[in-house]
Length: 493
Image 1: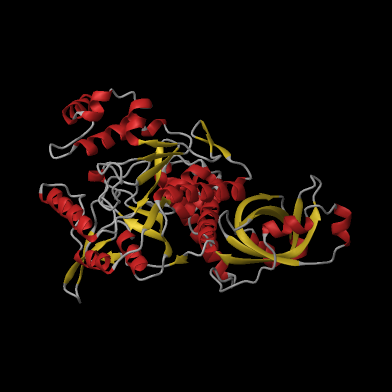
Image 2 (image 1 turned 30 degrees about the vertical axis):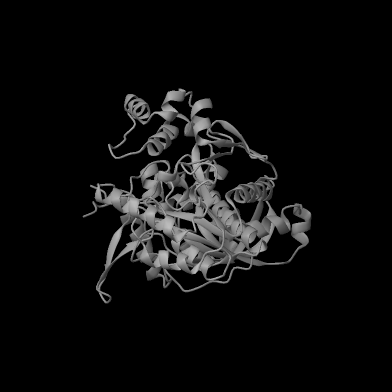
């Protein structure tokens, strides 16, 4: 049980006093005709004389974030969804009873105001109120005397408080919304169709990841939360939709760290008749469009690094990146035993069942990925780690696949899709064998998807882009939890 809090008790006493005066604590509705930002836009350039001559009154609403009392008058700062603005409440303007009730209001209460604008002696645009109305009584005080909330765990657990007291946090999520809006516009303008695919699936597929499992009582069957929408989106390509995308929630039963949350947002898109080379160019276009629309520049700062998005971006085969950036000796690239030995020396976890290709990708993760600050495409991923990608015509040991890295982390994964059903069955079978050998992230056999491929899927390329990680980059946020409104947390002790 929560211990007695004298600040909460004091607020409840004030709430009771307001009720005794006949003032409802939680009335329904209000009709503000002006926001803080709109007020600044309309009157921000008006001087005191011009405002004095303007008889226009307005209604505004917001949360009290600060107040200064001077006996028979008070200044308050209120905050709405667009920003903050000052109001001046005088006893002789609002009346004795209303001012008495106003004196019982606290920081955090939500109020409605009516009045006209003027300039204070310090030249601050201010609403001179002739009416004040309580809209919501706040029974708990804001943290740290409402000057700000800095404890990250509290911020993540109580995001609503974080949004109230930290203006920069609101800006992050406003920018996140704009990013997703721009992404949608980008693909719709290019004749892509936005679709929705199942979040509960009888067979999880489309990514190498451990799924969450649930049970549907009416159907009497186990279902999995999707790890990716890929196999359903490609079924739509088979159905002739040709260009599809989905901004979707994915779920992976994995650890939580600065880059990972078990529930996250991805953009996935598929384009018939395209190849992975074409998608790299399209990805450059997408980021160029985002950077110019958001910031009017192609260069940003992220975690102490200057990141230049100016295309074209380097395209480096994985083995070349290990050789040139990771300083890996040639023998590591050709000798599985030597590669395994180096991985163990570097304390990189590998399993006995891991092939040469998987070991090389683990070495890449450790030795190369953190050094890829400017946008860089890594190509030529091993076939054994790419069960859904088309084999390269010249070297069947690698696939027509790329991953995009920016700021030292993976941002996107794309490839020319495997549309040969017999080859896909063999790849699925190898994944099944890995699962039976203990790899809980390996994929399942999906007979319905194979059947779809047997009907014929046009040559296609597809890509997934981590929206959360893009938002991290473009808002300068060091942790994925900073860009997810309600990140998953351990239960409190």
